[in-house]
Image (tube, rainbow, N blue to C red):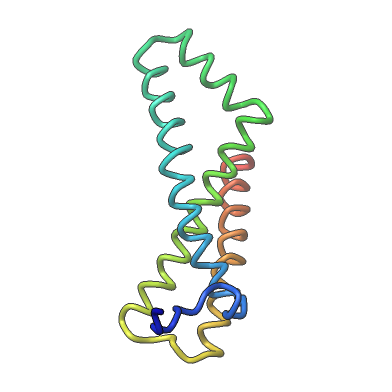
Length: 126
């Protein structure tokens, strides 16, 4: 019988904000790659296809569902960016202290929400 030790699995680790931020970083990157690429290709195709196609794209993106998609993409962008900046600081060897790591793990998504709200305030009100 094999006596090799088993690697720790998810049941052993306690969930913390650093784990959530790491998962959000991956999920938002995938979301931007899939949804963002689809919207970008649709926009470019509509732009190249003439005024009627572009008006259709504008109508779809101006609808409540379209705005929800655009807000979601901007939230994903800011969440991914803040998490990426956190990882950059960790990569240079700083921020590994438990309290500092926890604080930035909580702050990254909160800052991303404020950045998303500020961005849409400028877009809609500016």
